[in-house]
View 1 (cartoon, rainbow, N blue to C red):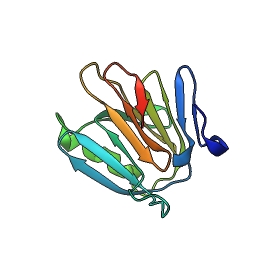
View 2: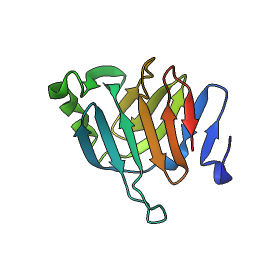
View 3: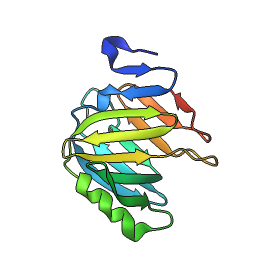
View 4: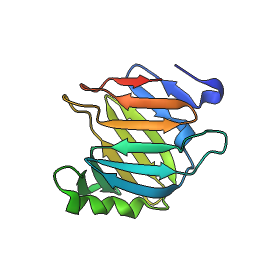
Length: 139
């Protein structure tokens, strides 16, 4: 699937979320077993642009610095706060793994689950969710 202007491309193994590029993390929410990165609001879209993750690793220049798992280790999930005001430079999913790259060298990787929807990206191009087993669906 490719949308107008190449904002989203979906290949056999990779889904790109180019509409997230250049957006800044304005808010970070924690609740239940999830973390939501709220990105710059798009005035042409009625809801905010955001990414929700359940279990993820936070990398800094290729090194894992934290496991983000609000459901089982909420005290360690605070490490994701370093992404506040960070600018996204790339966003994609390959084999069910969502990868968000930031301008400061940080990388957030959210992994698929066999049991539940593990991440979701919502923006002006629609909503994209990793289903149990790693398949990405959109609407």
